[in-house]
Length: 142
Image 1 (cartoon, rainbow, N blue to C red):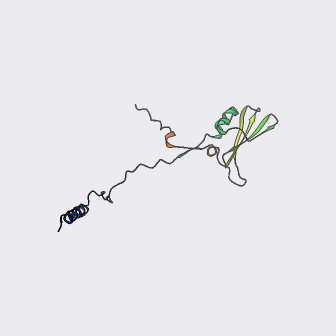
Image 2 (cartoon, helix red, strand yellow):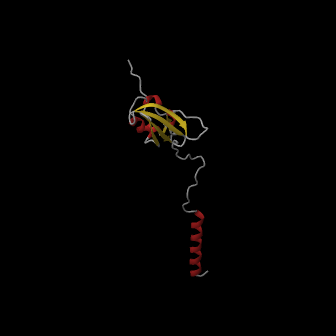
Image 3 (tube, rainbow, N blue to C red):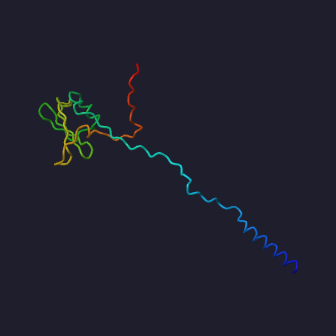
């Protein structure tokens, strides 16, 4: 065998030997390896609103702080009739005496004829994240 052929054969063998050792390969992941987990977010809570009775005798501005501006205001002698559209499913009806004065009567009705009237507390309920819920009070120890 001539020198150039021997050199070529040696180079070929060295290349093949390098391929046979495999060099560095990526590790094969184990099927039992647990992926890091995070707790799912807490579901939102529905907090019931105030009772209708809590607004009776109070200024209508207190009611409008919760319900917003009325969708309809109509004079009824020495009083006002006000309708508030609360969400998609509820309407609140207030009689205010004198006009712009105190809430004399407050009821709810459905937004769709034929449906049951929801409770005022349900009309004014709101959805909050658990982060917004204040902690329960702790009884004092003696």
